[in-house]
Structures are given as structure tokens and as C-alpha cells.
Length: 77
Figure 1 (tube, one colour):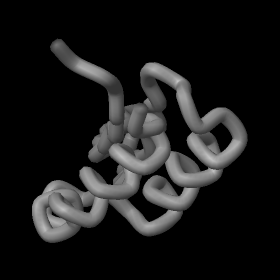
Figure 2: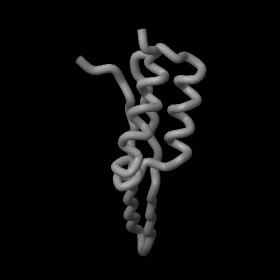
Figure 3: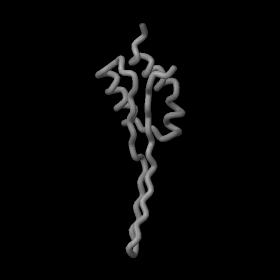
Figure 4: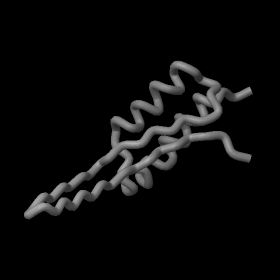
């Protein structure tokens, strides 16, 4: 039986360019890797991160915008 950890590594390497284009950071990939190293047969791992954030405040008004990326790796049927 192939362990989930090996499959997760294979998927992350296979789709590395697409993950980069979406905005997945190296830190997010490292957190996923750390999770499946602790529990190699886990069914799902998810991490999210705010990669860009702007905040404007003027004359009693505030505008805030965030770009959030979520990375989830899970078994699917």
C-alpha cells in the first residue's frame, strides 16, 4: 500500500508551476510537508495564508482588501 505522504509529495511536485501561478508560497508548501511528515496517512491537509493586503484610511473611511490563498491536499474518489 502506497502511503498518503508519498502521494502528497508526488502531487506537490507535479503541480509546482500551477501552485506558484495561483500564489501558493513556499511557506505554505512547507507547512503541508510538515503536517504529512508528522502523520503520513492523514486523509486531508489544508493551510491558508493572506499573501497580499492593502489598507486605506481617510476622513473616517477605511478600505481593506486581502488576497487569500488556500492549499488543500486530500484523498478524493
